[in-house]
Length: 228
Ligand SMILES: Nc1ncnc2c1ncn2[C@@H]1O[C@H](COP(=O)(O)OP(=O)(O)OP(=O)(O)O)[C@@H](O)[C@H]1O
Image (cartoon, rainbow, N blue to C red; front, side, top):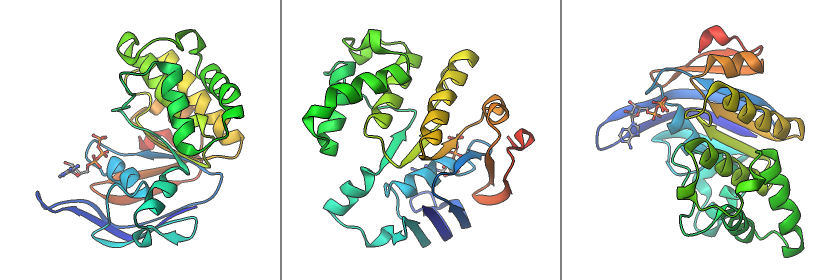
């Protein structure tokens, strides 16, 4: 589903090598925790999959297609296959929770007759139906994070990327968020989640990929939380 072939990423201005000669293959339907110290390259890796960044050398393939070849509208179409949850969740401030999700469905081109069911289902999954008329600034950090997850889920994309989705949450809420991703995984989604949380990795023993200074140093199939 996602394949990194000898990927090096250097941020030109600062000449920082964020990733170095990285090879990684993630199969359809896998759940992968991406772990490693701050600055190890986790966010950079996720941004390459979204084609927000281009590799300096090497190639990133998505569903067999080299992302380098994508231009214009095809980049937008590519991103619609991915539900992304980043720390800066970028909810639209002038729209309430429900409208934020409806906006995502409109962009995705989902037929109107499905909108209501999809929104209700996604908000239910994250336990936030009661806040559907609230505006982003009226939400707690954790609530806003859950809305961002609902927005990523509402289009039912085949791939979910999450960068520290539980970073601002207390342990109970963090495990709640993990449950949401577990359900998406059970429904067949491929999930790649960057995290610093041992608790999460321990709670859901799956593949764990450890990055260190931009290199893949361990790849464990059985969720060894000691890697975190
Ligand atoms: N826009 C940028 N310009 C220059 N250097 C950057 C940029 N973004 C990240 N870096 C550098 O690239 C390296 C990898 O950063 P990245 O954000 O991918 O790490 P991370 O593992 O996600 O860290 P964290 O756990 O703190 O989010 C770091 O050395 C960082 O300072």
